[in-house]
Image 1 (tube, helix red, strand yellow):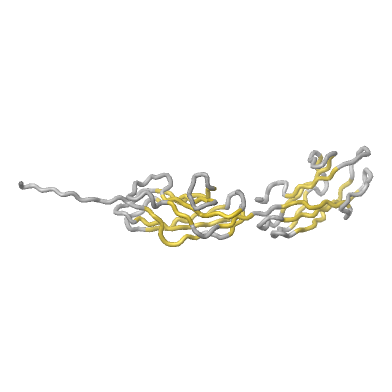
Image 2 (cartoon, helix red, strand yellow; image 1 turned 135 degrees about the vertical axis):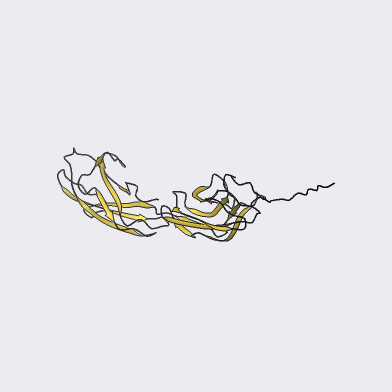
Length: 239
């Protein structure tokens, strides 16, 4: 009986959220976005590398089908230590509406923790995701909203009215393309002169009339023809 043994325990790490969460309350699709949260290891040993994954969800439940924002990577976290987990990126192209910021600590489960049920969190303040929505509301020829009868070779002026009926403003310069064709919506014949219109950015609910350029009617057979205008034809605005 000269020997005695007793056990001792080194508890595993435990990662959970601490402190406040930073995120916008309104964000437009395609614009810069930043979120941040803090993590603490309140377990008894150091944690190896792990990631924080942020998503936008229509509810307070973290699901892999929720819209992904991005990750922050920790190379490790000592017992008792805490650290911030910022993410900076761009609001993804998604359906506009109201969302919760949700995130999971140690997404992927690389760290064995004493409590695996305290890794998912959400911010109670929602984020409203907005986007512009541009529509061409009218086309004018020589200042007339009802397009006039013209002759081949005639020099005419093309104008258009555009409305932002969305919930966010546009970028400063938006492009419009003109076409002519034999049916409504046809985009087979680009108008060679003044085919791109520029206008300043539009706020939600704002409309603008843009004077484009002259167009010489081609040598066409008698008949009915159509002018088509497409706003943001080159997809520079996230709508």
